[in-house]
Image (tube, rainbow, N blue to C red):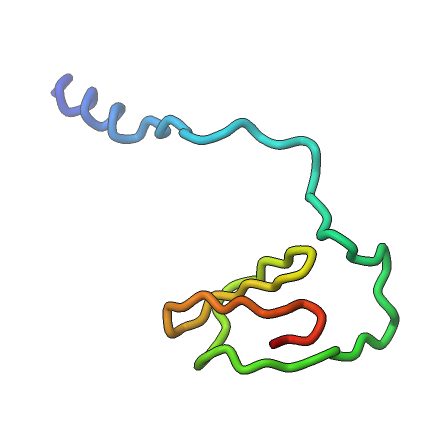
Length: 82
């Protein structure tokens, strides 16, 4: 009976957390993003990027990268969407 209790205690022990330490610096801001958005933001351009965009875009200073459901990464010019 003691062996069963020992096995159950080991199985219920929390797993060790692996990964980097917590970053207390806060969220990083996007380059050249204004501090506040206008009350009625309007799209600047539209672009075809496959069947559907999956996940959040990665925004750089001149390029926007998006992943698609077609398993492709599409790079768009941030100024005009081409």
